[in-house]
View 1: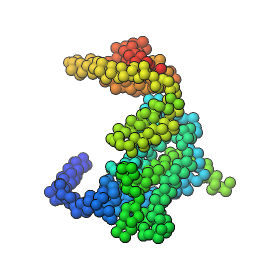
View 2: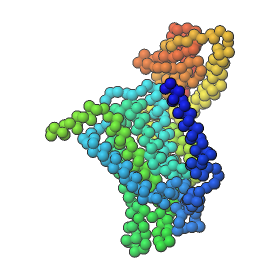
View 3: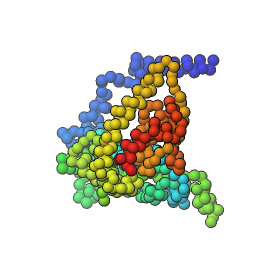
View 4: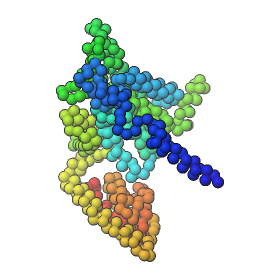
Length: 268
Length: 165
């Protein structure tokens, strides 16, 4: 009886979903029609003829997340950083991850993983530095690179981190470098405005109606889309090493973590 | 110094292929990245620069790849196809011990993956202390180490030894 109910409910849900998305058009426009909002973004993402409105990036999503709603992305990055700071606060006193004798999974998995890691880094960097041209960007690239930390923890064991020179303090330093670089890009127009007396806006990418300030959209004929390339690279550092930090801390065994934490709690 | 070349080449090629672009922008970034990643990871990947850049070994690798992808795969597939199509299903499944002689991890892993990728045999585990693979064999014609080595591993290990050992 239970099975019948489950089967009927799955069938009913599938049919309803199919009906809603096709006949009833619950998702709105399906097919070749483009919504007015989408048309606007497509027209403005990269448009050298509309200098005051464009983000100078053919990757419409990158144009939206780092220019049209750039401040929103900035705050998302801050929230992410706050989460990492919280993790570091909880794990205070835990400086070194690794150092035991365990060697992880079998030789076959270890050798194949070892070969995959340099390729993983190459792909992550490619996603980051093409974020202003193709789908991808700093966050996606950071998540890709963070896979390396998970591979190290699972395939080579937690003990491998200190052996290969990956340390929490280094990861935090690299993450902070990324965040400082983001801040530098954000404040550059402000500093320019203060120094020259010209009109410029925080996090400004390209020229505006009342401001001639802009980051270079092209260098030696290569489109770099103003702030977008720098924000993507900086976000790549911040996100990947933020994840590195958290994954390293989360992979620790309870007794390793408890020792420094309880030591502090007992006032020693 | 020569040690660092193979990883740098690998990273550069992967970067360019994944990016799908040979613009000056990508060539410069790819080159810088290749140098940086190679400097960081070569010590885990390459122990002998001379071996890694030997053209004779590269030729042996190409030869092995061609042999493996054509002859070895064809033989293994035809055996399994014959088993599937025959009326009485002549299988004799067993997990057998296959001793290996290689010392280099790349030879060991390459042999193990060659065995697994041909139908009919799968490496289910390995014991590096005793230098044996545990292989699931769909038609075990013998269980003694000489037979299993000759039937399952010999050609793979000999081919790969000329590349890595």
